Amino acid sequence: MNVGVMRQASRSLGVAGSARVARWNCVPYTQALPLPVSLGDMTIDGRPPAPFALFLARRPTDNAVNPQLSAVLLGVVEGLTEFLPISSTGHLIVAESLIGYKDAGETFTIVIQLGAILAVVFYYWKLLLAKLGGLFQGEQASVRFWLNIVVACIPAAVIGLLFEKKIKALLFTPTVVATSLIVGGIILYIVETRRATAGHQDNGLEPDLDSVTLRQALWVGVAQVFAVLFPGTSRSGASIVGGLLSGLNRVTATAFSFFLGIPLLGAAGLYSLYKARGTLSQVSGGTSALIIGTVVSFVVALASVTWLLRYVSRHDFRGFAISAWWRAW
Image (tube, rainbow, N blue to C red; front, top):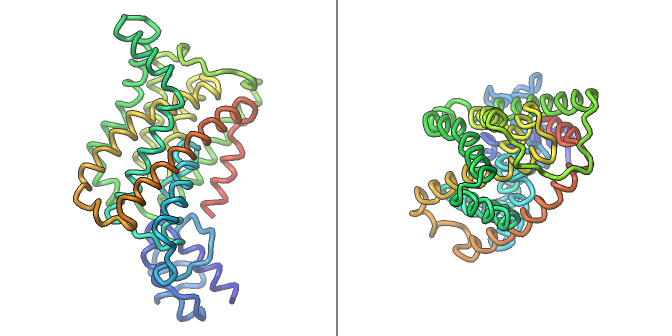
């Protein structure tokens, strides 16, 4: 296979280019790409190449993976990426393109996302019940915990409700997604480097959610707005950076980010699922694929959350920042 074909086809795989990529065959260079193609600046149809270019473009519709197996693979991708400081949406788009999975109305993606959210609820169920009981009893620490969650959710929820359609129409482009990945990685790297230089020692610490102040929760909430405004920005990554900048230690910022995902992603997922209720029967593989994907997403997300909390108690996020630059390239 010509190296030029591999390079150009792989760099063209992404958010806006995935539908076009699905039509390509592995044929000679001039036949593989729709014209016009500018080799000088590597643009296609006048637009820059999309991010997440990891594999050679092929024709997935001719070699589509079994729907049930596709559900397993996509469930793994969702579970691994939902709560890590990387873009879960971008990874799912690439995975669906590679295996030839057709997600009618994004219904499948919405449902398996709920599986990942349930994993966090399951992981923290004892703490959630304790905080809920404390809320009704007027316990100060529990009241402050739930107030912090509400305050941190408000900015992203308001911006999302007001500008969702405009953001999707104007900003959901390969250029914005790639730029968001790169800029987000740079910010995460700088924040962690400055903390290390300042002598912050987070190793071996446990999450201390009762220490989160209202001001710190607001910082986290404002940081999450960037994930809403700029597609390609990781919600968990943005909220963790906000927590670190507000003075939270790495483990507490990560755990707080997990809790914020429950109302934000849960509400968004249920609302989107309600809107897409008419397309459930169109999901490739039917109900069995939905169940398989959700269960796999739940199991993998549970393992991912467990691993990440252990990881951040011993390491910083600079490795994730570097991987974001590589994925954008």
